[in-house]
Image (cartoon, rainbow, N blue to C red):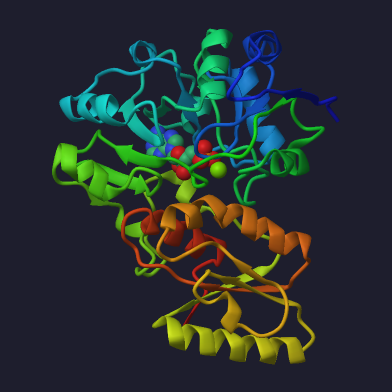
Length: 351
Ligand code: AMP
Ligand code: MG
């Protein structure tokens, strides 16, 4: 059991003295959870094998699931990669700092523990002011997966990090709620046609505007059989799962509402506590208790920002089953459906 230090920092008025305490822990081989614009991350010095091991231990993360290395300025990637393609240069200039991670061929200084044994390394330059200043002050590249226990929904609030990692990490920087709410887009630029390995805050449409054709790894789309092996090692694990069983109900929204009400009633008769992950447009159409809205269907950014928080709220309510509506897979809807499908273990009822 580690005596976890809590460091409160206002992102709009950063106390550099306090942030330096966290930066020194990183520099000296410790683990620090901190906010980014996507979700909270759990960081350690990416160039120090012993430090990185502590991340895997704290999260209970499988060792073949590679970490994303975070930097505070563009030049910092030069020592970490073998080459930077023209398309990579364009994407970095357009979307960094921001919620997109790029895959490069790794240089020798990146330890294999960071990349799960792969010859490639995932790198991101985050835009959150606390994340950037913390990485800069630490003076090292920071390997940081999401700051949750492996398999649980990613943390978007301080209390989620505390719940999962208190006593398991050296420090938690508390800096308010995260903005995007789903993890970064992961884009592989080592292949001829760039490929999205994980959908996220920067959408396929955003990318195609600046680099032309972009593919999505077929294994991560919700409409395929789940026996395809994803190219991004992390995407093969069960993820984002609350304790409750999640079931998606897909179809025309009027039919979805009917089916959810019917299944809810049946399951409640059998003695289960059933929650419904609804939207502003539908929340008043469901019977009974434990109905939580993700936001309006017209504002998918808000739906994404609320997704993991709402999954955790069902756990707080101790529901046994969550029945969830689906979303159209366009724009950030791709990221929402990818996370929902994984939370549900591909368990879908067609209404
Ligand atoms: P997390 O930081 O917890 O959001 O997880 C990092 C994600 O990035 C996982 O899905 C990894 O599989 C992916 N990732 C990290 N490094 C690589 C890499 N070299 N190649 C492909 N995917 C990667
Ligand atoms: Mg994660």
